Image (cartoon, rainbow, N blue to C red):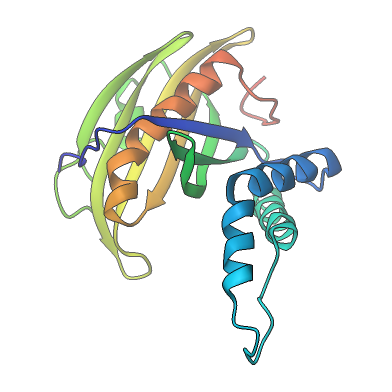
Length: 217
């Protein structure tokens, strides 16, 4: 299946989630969410009926703290060679999709087995795929990669889109394979998540994150 396309002015914000509580990072998430959706939350709060049985359920501050806490908990449960990336997609200045989550896994490169990356990202399809995947090749500043989009169906997630990508990255210590994966639902997200993951590939190539792994020295 070819991913649907939207002709819009789309930009992306992506950042790594720390694996443990970080006050500076949490404050940054709070400030960003307040900036992006604070006005919408305030408008919804103002429109809440005064005679409602319950008070408006949250504030922008509550939302920022809850999102940051949930992201850190998820990141802290990952293996040491993995990083959680969170972000948002914008149409102009409007934050249209958030929060978006992408898992990044860093592995020791296997140049003697060039086919394994294509199998890992499901270039020929996964069992849950309902149509043949769309495969696109990506060139970054420090290595080449591949991005796969497919429409899939599973018992837990229903009908959704998957994006799996791989990037063979040149770093000081040698070559590292970076694997990215995410799942989204909704036609609007299906139309944009592929380019969103590609922007992460460029972000990682430009500034690889710190990570620990017995596989990567």
